[in-house]
Image 1 (cartoon, rainbow, N blue to C red):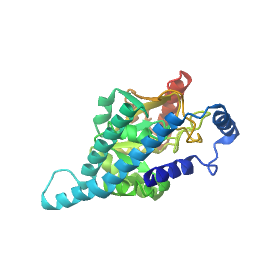
Image 2 (cartoon, helix red, strand yellow):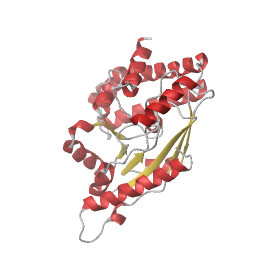
Image 3 (cartoon, helix red, strand yellow):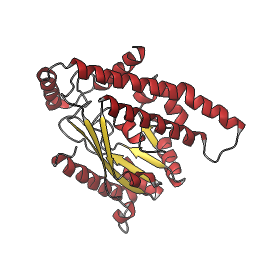
Length: 293
């Protein structure tokens, strides 16, 4: 129950009244909250899913990763401590996703996963729900994340964030430099260009950071469209607002984008980054309009 309380508190903080999603989003969220019947069984499954995620995260951060660091002092290995930690987190998230499938908390299907495992690459994904990152990590043996302060300092996640060397968004230019260095070393970077979860009314305007990093690192961008059907764990959605059936998260990996194709003679990288970002926004918007969201 302590684990569950902490996870629910994080959910409430991320979805709470402090964050503004616009009047339209509030109205829709209110209608969903009042119009959806209370389903004790499905709420209990959701609570179980959050509790199990807390257990897996704490076990990784407090047991597995420290043991890995200790073992690394006794023997030389080709991989860095960060990479070993990220691989351990991948295995933990894969276990959690399998548990979600078996328990009926969440079904997950991924299409085109091989394109995500050929670094260096910047993976650009939309962010429709609270569990998008665990789902993506479950199929990525190695991935560097950019995390904000709220998640980086979360007591259930902090040890994993630090052990895996995830990048802190608040560090600005230093974070960008480290992201480029890791990509040039052949690693994979996961970025949500919206900056936060997608509100109910539609995609946010994409930020140019992912395009700029890919241009400077000289690597491809792979778009990943995530949808949940029925929609669940959205921004602003109450914890007890659960659909009648088990939601299915579908992950669709798109064709790679080559940033060099957007460079024009006599222009700087900023102009190319704007064109890349506009192309990404259009790509995701079309899939949102078609219902692949």
